[in-house]
Length: 138
Image (cartoon, rainbow, N blue to C red; front, side, top):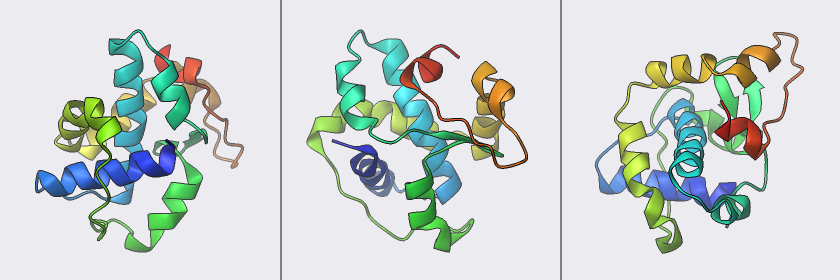
């Protein structure tokens, strides 16, 4: 389990539901799916296995840099990658679909309203790293 696997799963769920996924959407959906799970379930162990690389506070909200750069070639266009569905992540599917059908700019606004991003975003490229506690407590 890892952030890479989560990104592939989100792309696959999008594909199964005929929903395009842009790089910006992927970043926001990854963040909010993790947050949704942490808020709605008692077990943090499942997410600890996924969250192997932290989000950073970027201009448009939380971003996992490795995945961002992997798909940056698509710009604002949908990612042309069908992903890979991982059965172990099925519990996230409902949240993924919900977040993929939410306007991406609403997701950005939602992430900007969170205390951690407001406190830690800096236009001078000093990007704070999110711990799991930062994600769930906002």
